Image (cartoon, rainbow, N blue to C red; front, top):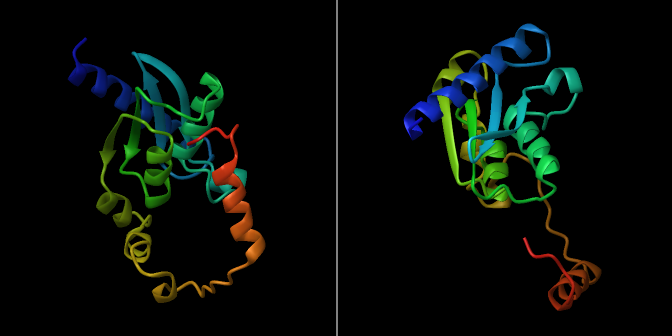
Length: 160
């Protein structure tokens, strides 16, 4: 199977998952599959409303499960297949998990057309903290800075 066929097959799996879990009442119409070397490491689906967890997006759920399956915080060498273009939170999680690739079906504009509009978040993230709509206060503390210095000097830390 060539890469295009593999991408289509795993993306179809993510799309089917999005529909089945949506129809089962788990949450919105989103599904994701993490694959490495042709093997599915984990699946995830939107469970925001059923889990009462605003971070339970399909991609985040799939990443959490895949990391647990391989017992590592890094998913280097893996591809995430998503039924929709990831929101800013999920895209950040994809980068943090060090996934090699992302393949998605629906776009953010298609999601916005059915009520899942993340444009506000895309607009807010690049702003300076004090320019965001969320009231934010920077309150420096010596103890916080000391903790960062302790981390920098820690010899047995696991860098990520």
